Each structure stands twice: as structure tokens, then as C-alpha cells.
Figure 1 (cartoon, helix red, strand yellow):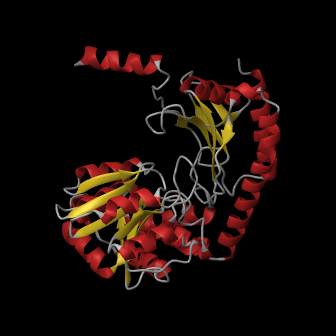
Figure 2: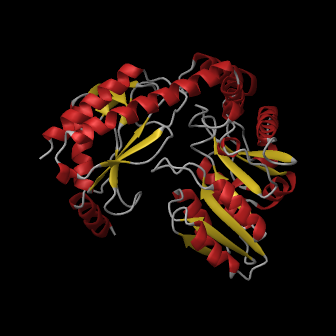
Length: 405
């Protein structure tokens, strides 16, 4: 076994696909002290977190987390259905249901420890043998794995290809149909075609699971997410959102019609058979939601949009100064996720290393996370960044690109 695993690791190393962890020595923030494989701590300007609103180190959330720990203790002690479902969890679920109620009739919410668990719970609980799941090719790994574990038949449709999806769903013979999609696609930054998907779902009596991990808190009125961004409302919509990205804390939720939520409580194994998250976390998330929905949240979303606009305005000049043979391109995203597609894994790693030598932390994303030949720098912005940080990033990209062999 060990020899086999060592050989597999060596093969990944030779293909520039081996992953390595870094150790963050300080709080999540634009400037973060990080220890890498050389074991030397360095302060880097980071464009890699999903802390889109810059709330992960917000003093009010730190205070709320401490207050929650003082009130409820360090841990929940058991699963939600035994004794771990605290008043903090219940209040948070009420807050989330109210927040999503303009888009989900008779909305209720259910909280989870992670988004991965939420998606696994959703698809295994709803995807029985009388259901067909239709999943977008570029969906997050948690949706892919949830579909694999479900008892349903699974069809993967090309990214945002609604014509192909409709051809397939028209021929479906199972009583129930479930369309599954990211709201904001995490490696590309583009949006699902949700208004058209909802029309399609209505024609074929299907339901839609929307993973809004990268839209919740950022898009729509009061940060309600991609459903608000498109102005959608339907009992056919089932929304999963995460609470460790724009919300700045941890955990996830599913919001849907009350009947769907009740069914998950009865049958979702990833919910039933795991210890509930610490109540202090739920208490802190409630404070985060108040910030997101208030004036400060609106200001942070506006600032984030300005940062993205400044970056996209400056990239054409950077790419224009590079040799045409490079063929690099900025993905057509208007969200906080701004991927610069470079092609090979080797080139993406080299570019990431070149940026790090200038004091910037921009990760290289490689297969199998993205399709072969589309390795990229996944550049993400936070409202905690400033316009000066964007200017430094553009300058560093231009220098690194020119120095690449």
C-alpha cells in the first residue's frame, strides 16, 4: 500500500498536480502572515479567500462569537435530534428563513456544519430511485459527490446548456426530476441561467437545487443572493448557502418550502448523524446577517463591485503587453471571483510562484478541480481590499507575465 501511494504521489508531483498546504499565522485578512514549505513566515497580500465582504475578522463578529461561547459553551454536545439543537441554532434558522422568504414560499431553513454536508444531505435525501438528477458539468465537488451517493439516476449536462438539458429532461420517465446547479460557479465566477432554468423546471414539473455558496451575502437586495439577483420566487427552488464565505463565520444552510425542510430532518443522514456545530458559531452568524442586511453590508457590496470593476478595467493592458503566444484570458465574470486562465498546470504554478516572490498570494487551480488545459489563477476580491491593493496586483501580474520563460 505505501509503495503504491508513494508512486501515485510522485506521479502527481511530476504532473504539477500535487497539493501542498500553507499555514496561516494570522487572521483572515488582505494582509496575512503565512508559513509555506520553506517554513519561513511571510506577510503576503492575499487574493485567495472567499471572505468576500471582509467580515471574517470583523470586531463585532469576534465579540459575538465570544459572547456566544460565554452563553452556550464551547460545543453542542450532540446531534441536533438528540440534544445539540440550541436556541442559537433555532434563532439562526428563523433569521435565514425570513431572509429568503421573498423568494421561497412558506420558507423554512435548516443549518449544517459545512456546505459539503448540506449538499450531501440534500441530494441523498431527495435523490431516491424514482428521481432523476440533472447536474451542471461545472458544479462544485459536493454536488457531484452528493449525486453519486444518491439512489437516483444522474445526468450531467454541459455547462449552462439549457437546450441540451431540456432535450434530456423531456425524455425522462421518472416521477420526480431534480435540476442541480451552482448559483455562482466557484472556479469561473459566472452565474447559472436561473430564470430560464425555472421556466424549464415549470414545463417539466422539476425542482431546482441552487448552491448559492458564492452568491449569498454578496448578490441581490440585502445580500439575499442569486435568487434575489434574478428576482425569482417559486416553491420549486431549494437554496443552499454557506456561512463561512461572505458571512465570515462557518457553517451552511438549506432554505426551502417547509415540507422539504421537514423531510430533510426526517431523512438526511448527513444532518441526523453528526454533532451539531457549536452554538456560539450560530450566535456569531446572526450578528453577521445583521451586518450583511444593513447599511454596512450595502457599503461593502458597493466597494467590492468597485474593486472588481477596477481590476477588469486594468487587465486588458496587462494582457496586451504579454507575448500573443501566451493566450491567457480573463474569464467573463462580474463577481468577486476573477479567474485568469493560463492553460497548463506548470504555467499556473510558475505564475503563482512569481507573484509570491513579489509578496502576493494568488493560488494556482489545476485539474481535476478545473478541466484539463484550463489551469488558472483564481483571483478573489474582498471588501477589505483597497484600490491600492488592486493596483499592486495588476502591476505584479504584468511583471510576472513578462518574466515568465
